[in-house]
Length: 85
Image (cartoon, rainbow, N blue to C red):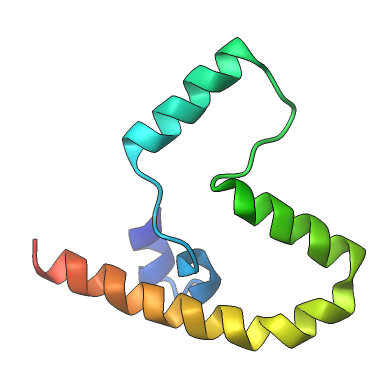
């Protein structure tokens, strides 16, 4: 999915947090089998941020430049890691 995002000019916001690992997602799925929930964010901080933005949309305009900068940095880090493989 990340490769498709990169190839098609996807948003740097996809790289604000580190990409999820298969083991991490598997652990979340196993937890959901034990305790089902309607919606899960990975990482959970994404869900908290999304809820805050829904409650305070003006804040979104204030933090968007920060998130974009962090996302561009995360994208560069991801691409550097791919180049080393």
